[in-house]
Length: 129
Image 1 (cartoon, one colour):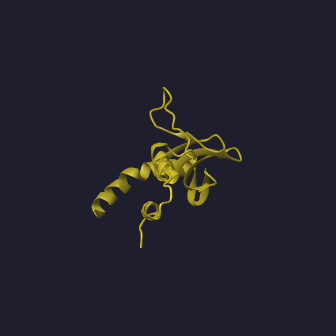
Image 2 (image 1 turned 45 degrees about the vertical axis):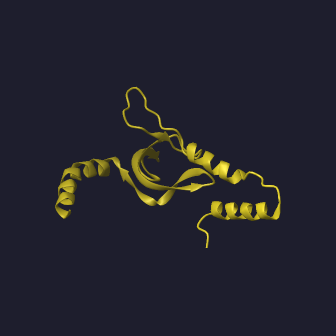
Image 3 (image 1 turned 60 degrees about the vertical axis):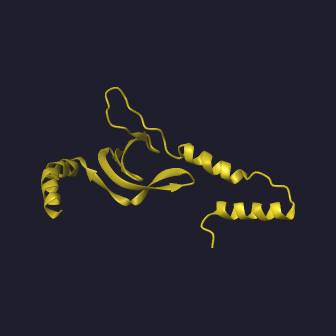
């Protein structure tokens, strides 16, 4: 059983040559190579401002998204007049990245507490290796 469409295409063109049919260049191969060179249109370009050393992009509501994994972002948003730190997984819907259900929203106090625990969590992580 063939492993790729290209393999099927090449065998079809070989059988066409044997039957005397005209061989036409396959456009699907050319399109496939173009897609590898171009970055996906669904991802926004990252920005580096003069006073900001970390790459980020703009979310749907104008908040800055900082990527730390594939489709995983940290952002700061406001809800009912209070700021929240969102650590969330995103999903793609028709080429647009949208926030998913998997994630957590931390208040400013919770964020400060989490930051104070980072050194201890790092020590525990190193012990478990």
